[in-house]
Length: 229
Ligand SMILES: [Zn+2]
Image (cartoon, rainbow, N blue to C red):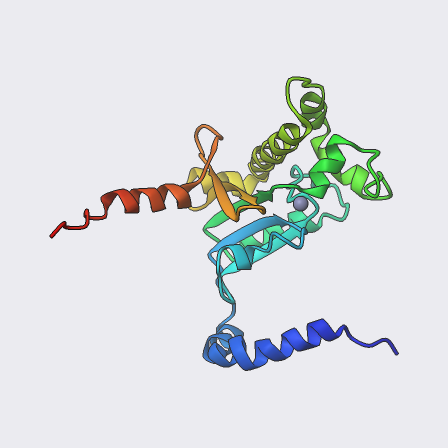
C-alpha cells in the first residue's frame, strides 16, 4: 500500500496541535451552526496563490473555487458538467455570500498556455486547450501586439482575463440581479507572487492599483514628525 505523503502527515499534526487546538471552539460552532462565509473567491489552482493564506482568513470565512487560471465561464445551462458554475450557484443562492472576488496572479501557467498553446508541457491536451479557449479572443489580440514584451503580454492577459471573468459573472441571472439590488459586490484582484503585493481592480475603470501599499504610504505620511529636542 502506498504511504500517505509524510510532508502532509507532519503538516496535519502541526495543524492539530496548533491551529485546531487554538480554534477548536470556532470549528465546533461552524460544525453545529453551518458555514456563513462572507466571500466567494475564484482563484487559480497555482500552489503559490492560496486565498486563505493571502487574505489571512480562518475557517468559515471564504468559500473558494480554484481552477486553471481562475476563470469564470459564461452562464451555460446546457446539461454539461460545470464545476465552477455549480460553486458560484451554491455560494450565491444557498450561502448568500456578499462578495465575489476573482483573483488572478503573476506568472500564471494557464495564461501562458493561452498565449502560447503549443508550449510544453502545457500542450492543448484533453482539457487545458478547451478550457483556455475561453480566453482565445483576448489572447489572440494581445499575442499579436508586437509593441509589448512577452512578459508585458502575460501580465496584460492575466488582468484582461479577470475583467473577462467578472463580465461572465454578470451573465448569471441571479448574480446580475443581486448586484443590481446592491446585495452582492463583484471584485477583481491580481497577486504578484514575486513581491507579495495584491493589486485590486477599480470597479469603474478596470485599472489595477495596490491599496495595501497606498494605505501604508498614507499612514507613513500622517505619522507625526519626530520631535527634535
Ligand atoms: Zn495560475
